[in-house]
Image (cartoon, rainbow, N blue to C red; front, side, top):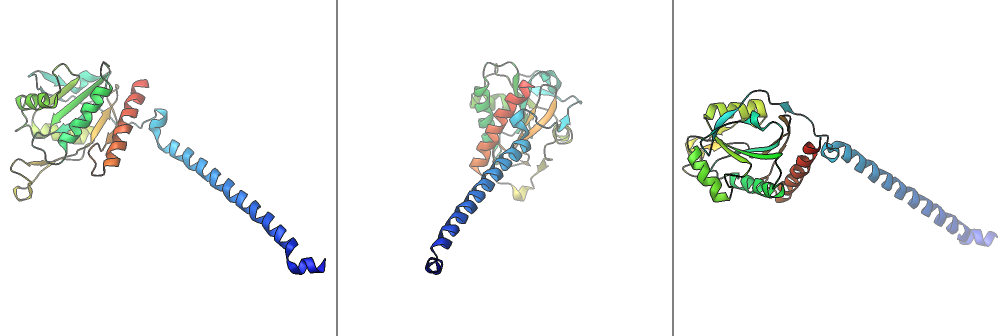
Length: 231
C-alpha cells in the first residue's frame, strides 16, 4: 500500500477524476454564458420581436414637387411604411449605391400597396423635377412604381429632414474641397424607416465603407419593414 502511495497511482486516479469534473464545470459555465449572451443580444435587438423604438413623430407637413410635376406631401403616405433617403445626381459619395439598395427593396416588396419609397433632392438647384425624372428612369424606376422623387427649396428641405426626421445636417462643400465641379454638398447617406403611423423608427447605413456592415444594414432594414407592417 505504501509502495502504491509512493508510486502515485491512487493520486493519479483522483487527479484524473478532479480534472474531468473541472472540465465539465468549465463547459457548463461556457454554455450558460453563451445562452445568456444570446438572450441579452436578443433583448438588445428590438427588431427580433418587432419592437423597434420610436425615435420621432412626424407632425409637420413636408410638401415638394414630384418628378411628375405634381405636389406631394409626406403626410399623404400615412398608412404605409416609408423608406426615405436623400439623393443627388452629381454625388460622388454614395448616393447611387443608396438608390441601388432601395431598388433591391422595391423588388423584394413588389406588389405590396403598403410600402413606399421616397428620394429627396439634397441640392434642388441641380436636381429639379425634370432632372430627377431622367435620373430615376435611368435607374429603372418607372413612374408607376411606389417611389416619389421630390424636389423643393433647399433650406426647407435641409431644415425638415434634420430637425424633424433626424438626419445629420447637410452642408455645402467649400470650392477647394470639392472632388469635382458639381460636388456641392455633403449629406447624410443613410436611409430612414418611417412606419405607417408616421413615426421615425430607425436609420440604416446602406452605403457603409465596410461592405459587410452595409449588407447587415440592408438585411436589418428588410426585417424591420416586415416588423412595422405587422404591428
